Length: 229
Image (cartoon, rainbow, N blue to C red; front, side, top):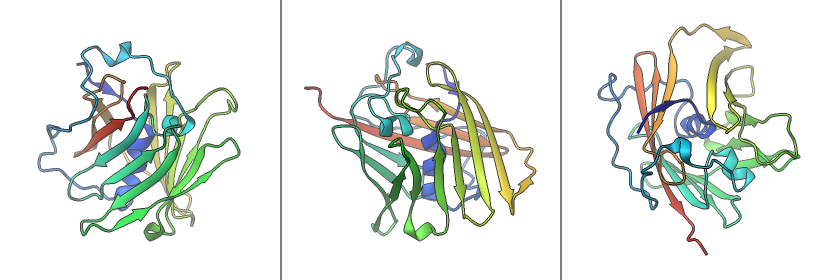
């Protein structure tokens, strides 16, 4: 299957939820992606992901770039990053976002919604004052929308902002990452790319390889679905 280089909101969001901001953890081999053996309840697609109809079934599923009647999605980024699990009810509404420590302690995220019932803020108490903020397009009332901008901020003039552009099918075709300290832009000439692969039959990716300069990060995603009626 052809690999596609683009970014999704939840990739960046879960990265911030699971680790300290702006900390680069190098994998055992920074020159190639780590193989995945992620198992999901849906089989890997036998057709190109471009052939799958990309249609969100709820606003919360759109926020996390998920297609189909998803029950839960688990993110595993290796031993240096805490795993995160997002649970959805049968209507596609987020019921919980849980981060689990190495000792088995679980922490629930707090969610705040905007006036259009879209997730606007995600934060964990132990991360305070850092929070994650999502912004959406101007098309209020025009169907379910994936975020356009993701920002992780300490609410004290320090933040990282990622902006991405999507095509008419909702796939991201461009990305811009900027870091600010006391509102001053930090120069960073390192390239930043994200490769999504191992798509399942619903068109959801199961493996993400992020490359930032000389560093490589791998995110494995396992998705479970509600049974069809």
